Amino acid sequence: MARDTVLDGDGSSDQKPADGVSAGNDSLLGRRGYLGLVGSAAAAVTMSGVGAAAEDYDVIEVGAGQTETVHLSDGESFSNVLIDITASNAKFHIRAIADNWEIRNVGFRGNWDSTAKEDAIICQVNSPNASGLIENVYFMGSENDNTYPGITGINVANGHAGDLEIRNVNIQNCPDNSIYASNPGDSSRHPSGAGGGGPVVIKDSYARNSRAAGFRVGTDGSIVENCVVVDCDKGFWGYYEHTAVKDCDISGSPHADVRCGAPDWQKGQNAEVTVTNTRYGTDDNRGAAIHGSSSGTPQRTEPSEVEGVPLSAEEAASGSSGSGRPDDGSDEDDEDESGDEEPADGHLLSFVTEPDARYAGYEFTADGSVGFAEAPDPTPSGGRIEGGTYTSEDFVEETDDGWHAGGVTGGGHGDAFRVDGTITSIEIGQPDVMWVELDGERLEPDEIIEQTGGEPDDDDSDEGDDGDEPDEPDEPDEPSDDLTNVIVIDACGVSSETTFSFDVTGDVRHTPYLGSQSGSISGSTVSGTIANACDAYEFSGDIENFRLAGNANVSVEYDAL
Image (cartoon, rainbow, N blue to C red; front, side, top):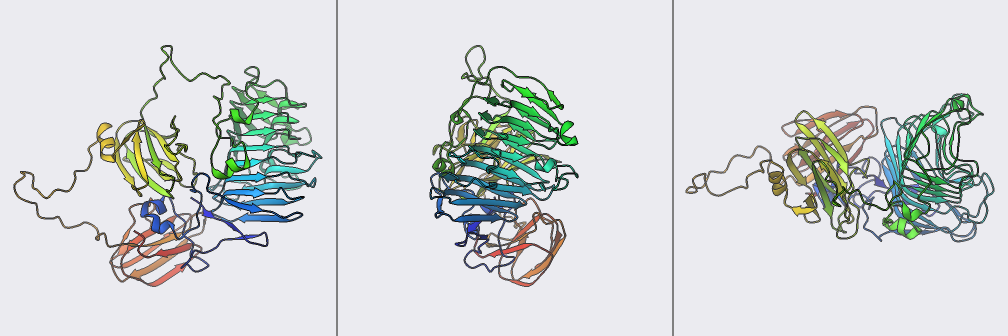
């Protein structure tokens, strides 16, 4: 979950503090679904964020001859927005040169009239250990003029050093590439200097009628997967280093459906492209190396044939998507000879939300391996159930005791995981708007644990083991449930150390919903040091003697739980 970014009237953007929160280091940014797990009251201190329900989006109308720009900083998001540029020569730019940002559910309505060299979206992830996400974007470019260089749909800047994933985008009619993502592979001899080298993953997307290339990448680890490219000068272009194209259909490219290398640069002459299960007609290695060959005649040519690609600006802004077809070009489901679906290993564990859910967090543990998955059926409200979609929140990790996973979802969507072995615990932050399913069946968490071979926690009982005498209540191991206040110290994305300390007038404990517990508690005093991490505490009473040295966002919410 990223912080939401708003656009000012003058065309710039700034992070706005919520009511009751002062400007400066007082913005609340959760980690591993913290906001969802501690409840909707805590989530209320942030902007609306990325969990908006379907068909719930803002509209930005740009006036004739006007240009507006939104800038994203570390941890910010720009989501669920319809950008209306139907007025003559209206332009809108999105700039994300930061860490851990998200651009989701954005639709451009109207034509890009200008023929000047510009970028609708320019982005990079600054730090090697950070990430960025662009998802569900619709941009039709310049349908009236293909003068080169003109507009680029998404331009990944030279300094990109982290991990960037682009998925479910529909970008057409761009004179200078639908997605121009080779800059991070630039050599030191390039006028821009050596690139940051960060990989770019482009998945489940569509490009058409763009000059130069549809999708152009150029760093080790970059891949274009399950995409369709039609009528671009070059469909896929692996410009530098070793890139890959997989499960794609590429056709109608006058120069080459698949091109590898760039003779103008020595580094480009050493480029390599690995082709897997991709259907295309022509290729050109430009003196570089293409590993693999076409798997046959392209089967898909329309955006509706790529699952999740938006077919209109309104569809993108609302977060809905198309139905698509299998990426092998066939219309057949994966069935065995008897006609039954081939069973998958392990259990499908899904966390599903109501349409009004926001930042609904969850965690679970298992003694067998866990991986992100996608459920075959939508939620009752029509949303997708797919794990790993919020790269800054969804996680799977192996621990000394087994596997630990969790995340954040909402808006009538859900997350799914494939789990081998026994599920040993499940925690849900907002059970009023979230439920759990095992292999498509809605069950209580204890039922899921029991069905997979685990032992659910016994309910509290007023009777002893013999059923005759009531047990004396146990002394609590932790402070009572009157710890309803929350403080979060957030230094995610900050590599330097931040030191903090404070006292409380009541009780205090680490929140059980946050993976990081870096600080120490001594009576009513808390102190700690964090770097690129987040720490949070539940407490009663008030905070006194707060001290912080470093760069962190600090937020306090009373009666949050």
